[in-house]
Length: 473
View (cartoon, rainbow, N blue to C red):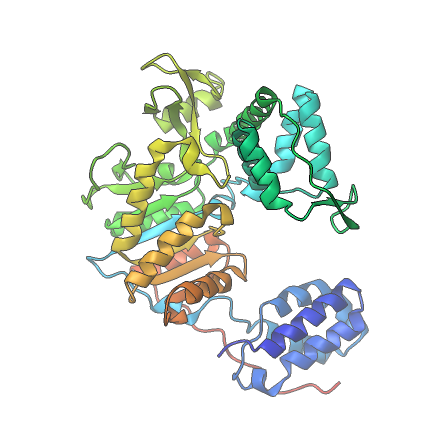
């Protein structure tokens, strides 16, 4: 069963009706869908979007239809399949490896309460205002006028600007490639304003030092955003992963998060942990938990001069910070060469490999972990365009091993479908059933899922029972 394109079209129409607040028509549209014969008899699934719309209009429904119809719609909406039934049939073979990829969404549920990347930009501007720098204030205003809300876009643009201003030729070429038919100019203060073209001019010489200072300041401000992560506590998802590791030691954990929540959860299970940093070969010792932090960690520091990396005990830093014995060091002195040492926290930008070449070895080990695993469990990871290299790793390994399964746990109901579409595009004869979807908060689902993977818990019964009696309008 699936959702037809006709239902998708009807859902898009319903979303327009919702925006117009025409609730009378909308309630009847929802009833029309849920009482369709193909839906009632199980030949077609209901799109989850109907549940989202119904939740927004439910309180108005008794004004327009009978209570019986409201109850009928309620019952139908409850049958929406948010978790693929086959999820509960997956088991971890005793000797096979499994890789878990944790994204920002894994650390969002309480008590961790760490914001995802899309929530960082307002906090960055709040901190920037304290500096009272004209360039930062102007950039803040421009971003607001042009609806720039993603810190990933901002930091990537700053990095590219810093690189390109060092060469007038590169700057001119960038302008040529972007505006070969003239520059596009939008009406200030609007995204969809009138667009005009004007002749392209050669870029004016840029103040390289000013651009570099602005880019560096934004990076420092971003590092300060990681400060609250020091005191964050593991949530139920982190603890479930640690429990899985304790029972199935051939488990790799890859994370793009800087926080120490998963580190602490593993430590609390008394499991030795290996970060796989600076090792010439991949460690195949299954007695140690393999934790690959691809974008660095709040307790790692990197020297820009000698490129040495130091890792400090997370428990010590956490205790010292909480007792106000230590502030979070945004910049320090390298004990090896006396150069500048910074936290090894890779900001969310597209050119990550430029900044911390010492992390390249971790990325190689991540690829090996994906390759050796029969099951890849992705939790709270958005498959961002800035992380296309991770998407390519997964795609490569899914193509090389036709038995490998990909489980995606996320609250975004469209994520798994979008990932599946990419895999179908890039892999010949890809079987879409190899992607298993679970639209649920990870702290709710993961404790049950990990037990199910280990065959410790009876899988939940399917909730696909359908109402069969229609209520006439």
